[in-house]
Length: 254
Image 1: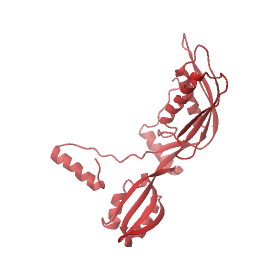
Image 2: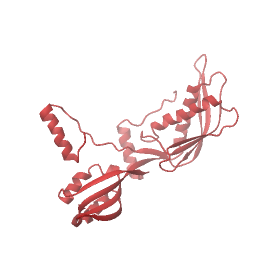
Image 3: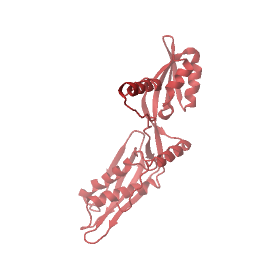
Image 4: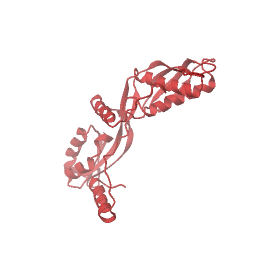
């Protein structure tokens, strides 16, 4: 279900309830934050388990480093020789990718980082793919303790259409929402204000715009890029994630 604003949505919900006896629960939209690292570290991931009979053993050394925004994940295999057999190396990458999905600090996917596999060791009997996937996950956890993880927030390209007499109020409101006004233009008799604004600050914008313009304004927005979230706001998002149970506690025993 979609609508042009909060009031539109609430009207449709009331119709569903009164006409079709369907109850609808409304929740605020969730902001798709992401995480990344800001430091370069070399770490070891070592998984060893012995419980009678055949054991489990996987060991890897990896260098984690940040990438530019939007680069995603990059894997580089720089092992020469047989420190880790070729057939086990993809399992290390898979373990790291799996761990990155649940993030480092708030349960959001970790992106824009590079991992270089530089060394490791194996056991001729106890090593298998499961063991090296576990080693990859442990390397990831060891890395994020030292690589200064941070949160990223989605930034939106926003265009606001409003009467010219209220354009100053609109720009002031966008600035208060941590927006960066990029320019203004005229389209017919309306002022067009272009800005980049964090998505988290735009969730209730329609009602504010209606209030300032007496319902004569409109806007549209589209995703632009991810930017680091300021530290004071990061702490709040992390606390909310902890309260909601988003932060996953990894099992050391795998």
